[in-house]
Amino acid sequence: MAVALHVFIRDKGAAESDDISVEHVFYGRDEAEADAKRVAHLAGCENYALADVEGRTAEMLEDIPDSEVPTWDDVEEDDEPIEVEGGQVEGEDEGG
Image 1 (cartoon, helix red, strand yellow):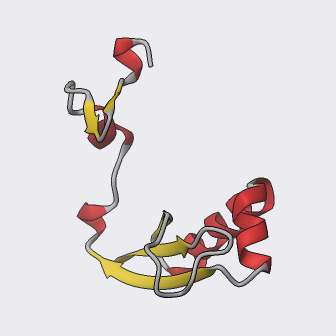
Image 2 (image 1 turned 60 degrees about the vertical axis):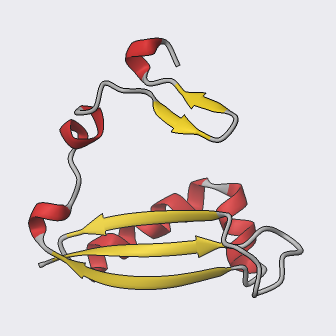
């Protein structure tokens, strides 16, 4: 069974009761692999590192079936642009 390590980040100045602004998800074959990916990302992401130091992060480990670990093909499967409030995010094929 694989795992998904969810890291939730609150904006600076946000109260604990405020909405979460960002979620990172790190996948691995086990907790150690997912955590190694989290640590590698933490080392290269100033915003995440600052939030971690300031105590604005929370983690949740989820056991998931191996088949639910996304692949790059899963991400590129949908040719439709992603709709977002106030516009749309264009995929690579659309020049975005």
